[in-house]
Length: 388
Image (tube, rainbow, N blue to C red; front, side, top):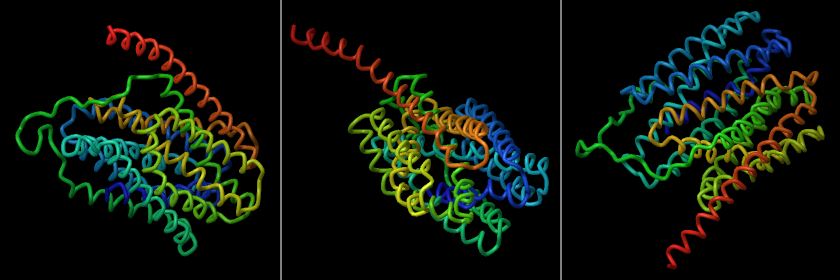
């Protein structure tokens, strides 16, 4: 939990400011900024899914995360000294390409840990762990905004580096459970309660994440364009993070009670409502007011969707966690590129995530319809058999 908290701090410090850093400090144009993020995200995707495929055969998942954190720290030290497009591209790739491994392997570690020690609490425990990252992200947003005011972008980058350093130290102190139970040497039976594989739902989750990626990259730039203050983006996200903490557990409970797909649809509707407000280019206060609504969407995306993907691959926790991270990274890559079709940083950019969310809701509805058809038939025949 402490490791995810520190990871969240580092992420929150840099995430809202990174695009502005490339624009203002290094002087990159919109297309160059997009290419830097897109190429680094592509490398992150390749590294994450490749290592995820083989991670379940490795004895230590902790070691993967520690090595990834060290490489990210080295990349950040180089990124601080970038002063042109080529350097920014190369150094950000080094700083971010291994980062997907950290989240994937941390959640794989956590799933293995709770599956052995508290199997009935696995899903809720993972949601609480994700909440701890949101707590760190919230703290990081506030720290990052103040570091920017006090020490400019260099302070922001050093804060991000400190988050990785704390994460690495906590991982080194963590004792990873082996392949056997702590008490008796018998291997744990195969986990139960998984989800059937659904390519349709994976595509819908990819679209949900893609819409959020568009908003994540371009909201700070749109806010800067509309109101002229870069730090406002961090304050807006801090409101979102506060409500994430409250809604993460609630969304997990709703998913368990009403079904994952219904809650994913609810999250999509919340996102559409929020994007509609952004499109109207309202006063700054409205950007803050809609954040609780968007927080529910983000809580569902990170908590409910993540658990759903991992449950498709319960027997391969490393691959399942890495697959979810790969979906997020692929969505990020697409989210960076799509807004290039709209000039500047106008609120009209948010037409793109709105359309993507609508498409994802159609796919989820289609999946629910397919599921309902066969299941009702099986259920009725089963009832008949019992009656006889």
